Amino acid sequence: MYYSKHNEKIVYINHYIGLLEVEGEGLLLKEDAEVWPSERPGWQKKYDTLSITEGITGLAEGYMDAFAHIECLILARTVVSIAAAKELEDRLRKNKVLVRGEYDTFAERFAKEKGLFFLHCDIPLAEDDIGDHYEHDIITLRFHTNASPDIHYNCFTPGSSAGSYGGGEYAVSLPKDFYRGCSLEEFTSRFPERIHAQLMANDMLRRFLEAANGRKNGE
Image 1 (tube, rainbow, N blue to C red):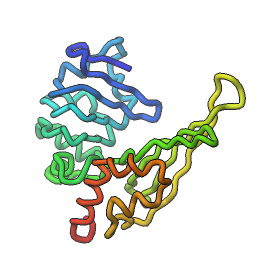
Image 2 (tube, rainbow, N blue to C red):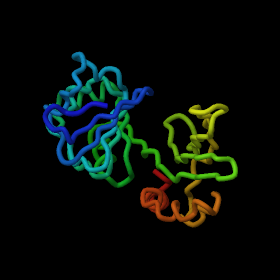
Image 3 (spheres, one colour):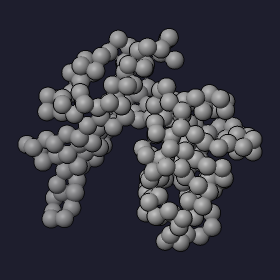
């Protein structure tokens, strides 16, 4: 985890899978790409995916210069602006950066305006506690550029000894047009009753189903 030297409310959460999440509020400035605890120059090259999370409203001029090697940019729906000079636009296109976010948001408009490919962001669905097996599952609806969508289960269970954890993960594939004519209630019906309330209260899932069904040919 890193903190912006310019604004300690801007937090970077690093993941071993190449994902770097940025948390905070307001506009990300060029200076916010300088972090502490100090890292070597070019530390950003370790990450190929930059996720700008809920609460951040925009990326100021120069901010993206520090992340010139990313392959995927994920924008929360609160992001409404990116200062993109021609040099940045050219670099994004040259690197074929994938933009991800929700339908009908700035993320989708930005991708279209800059000639970049857009893919809906993954949707955290629910967390399921299975008491009989002492299991905790994190369930996510995932979208892929080269495969059908799926439901991903990240399962956590007690290990065989004190202080250890077991579990695993698996995915269930969905038809590409699984959303076609599918209401929130119908989608929720495929899951256990114990997580029904979580799914029915999932605003991102509801927005996706409504927007996807309202589009011509699902585009």
